[in-house]
Image (cartoon, rainbow, N blue to C red):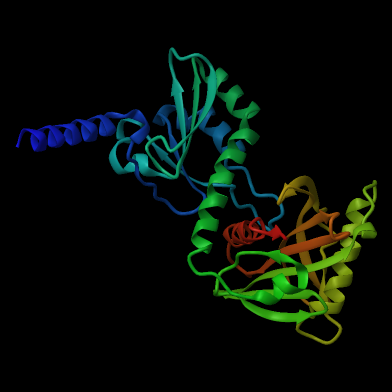
Length: 325
């Protein structure tokens, strides 16, 4: 009897100590639509120059869309109501004005999981504005990475199963079962999904490793490749119509990494030669030296009369799941 009692007490003490451990913090699940940012800030600051600085940087227009759409849809929350379920937002920007030293702190899973919390502290409006402006790209990158991860998690719930992409190109890529393989020939894949007013599309193909030279004419080379692919594979609605790059809108280039490989990211507007159709595209050219090739993955949307930010974000999240085997 005494032995049984001692064992019971030991188990109880262990359980209590385990619960008290700071490393065993139990967090509830975060919530919120993709790219919806909660901004916790005093009403006075939000309506003044500090709020304007946030709107001009963190909610600046997305580059590469035919109309202005913000990076994040913002909802302002006064600090007095930042309690309970409000703290469960997945991405939060909190502005604190007062005695705290000037700083920008980025934390993960503070009130919920997964979650990214950015806290900007300063003693004056000018100090806070300066911190927001100087750290805007760092803040945006942290928030966007969190949203990309969340979107990829949702994608994995219902994956399309197509072994031909893996067999033909030696890659894996996660895309939802709502997509269909519209075209598959000579290691070229066109993947499509019907949306409310049009289609969301992915192109995957490969080029020789020396197909692009990194010099001053890089944009011109990428445009030439895109247009040649469009002429062969992406026809328009009428005879002689095919997808090209919009000449009046200069594409934006950036060097990034996908699957730890050097990648050229290009954002711009596509057009259809001899037809009235256009929309945004995002193109990635991945350097795969092991297979002596360039792997090209492009996403583009056709969605007349509606916002296109979320469609392009979905495509970017899909593309960034790619793994070269």
